[in-house]
Amino acid sequence: MVLLGMGYDGHTASLFPCSEELNLSLELNRKLRCLAVIPKTAPHTRMSYTLPALLISQQIILMLTGDRKWKVYQKTTLED
Image (cartoon, rainbow, N blue to C red; front, side, top):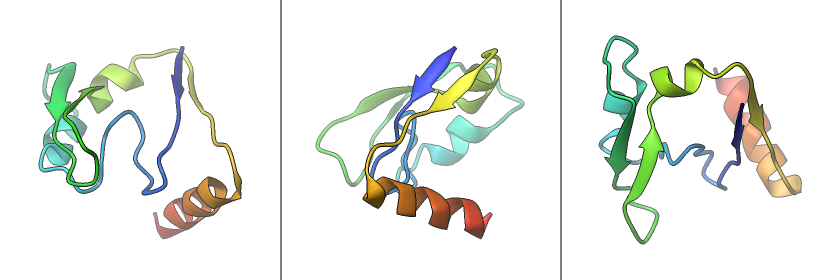
């Protein structure tokens, strides 16, 4: 089971939309399971699982707190 939170910019699992590593972390055909992410909107480098590593979990839970994050989530899901 993986329990994820979400930032105000919509990032989760330290996969920031503004990071140069985002595309690499989302590639499904790579065997890479984690990588360092350097977000432009956070003060330090983060370690993150890649999408393939997250998807092998039996259960993924996204926990949101507050109205502001709920609105970000709704906006993000409606755009996809």
